[in-house]
Image 1 (cartoon, helix red, strand yellow):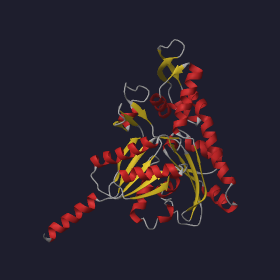
Image 2 (cartoon, helix red, strand yellow):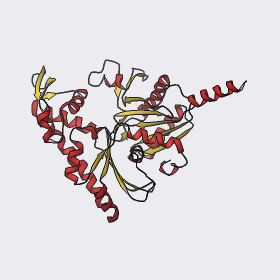
Image 3 (cartoon, rainbow, N blue to C red):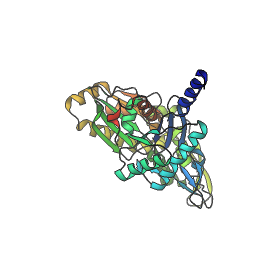
Image 4 (cartoon, helix red, strand yellow):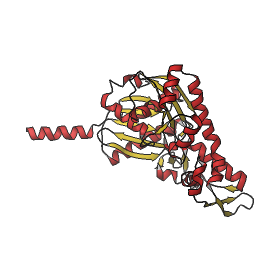
Length: 348
């Protein structure tokens, strides 16, 4: 083999053997490939056929929610920051890796997986086992808040503390970090899914309208805001659903003020999580955070008015990361460049 052939083989080997990072989120799962960036982003939803075999994954499976065909079971493996179904998580993780390989071939033996901090030891072991079944020999677990801090570009090695708040699909993670360790960390089963469910309950209770989960999520992004000053700029929309009295299809005109009533208690509770953190850290750290503010990330942080609402209620500056949906997996991806440097942030 000549020099040119060796060089070509080396480039091919480096292209194929790339380490992987996966954000296993309640609402969405993202896959990051070293040297390539994010190669896949799909809802954490799995559809199985009558024999328990994967039928659809991600966006395709999500389309069946609320209108599942006969002999098809639709599952959301993660709920509220915990594993809802161990077998489904294992199947989903293997399937998402296989799908990623279809998009971008790789044969890495190492993977960093982001997980909610609420997972039990049994649940963590299930994630580890699923990753190994997917072909990874070395598996590193990192909690979402720590990955979010790294992805936001914060220097987690410094002594001066900072606070990260990640509002995801199933959990709100609040962490105060200093020198690659937590001064405080907490996780609440509260996130975007709860916003959707609150909208669904409000429509049922106040309008007698039964609306599916996909439609409620669409309403959240179209007209929901937790900042009343936005209301004038947000038009009301016709919402289609089933009238629970007549059991017939109907439409109701719904505006941002209506949705506000449904979702504001959730954001009040998120504020309580921040205040709880502030009470449980040293005074010097509290002073620093009150001066510097918090870094906000997670998909629910993109909700209209979320940043302004939190700033007003908490009386601290709030900075939303550039790509809130991607911050966690980007942070995990960054650890791939120097696993030894980041060894203290991994929880296994």
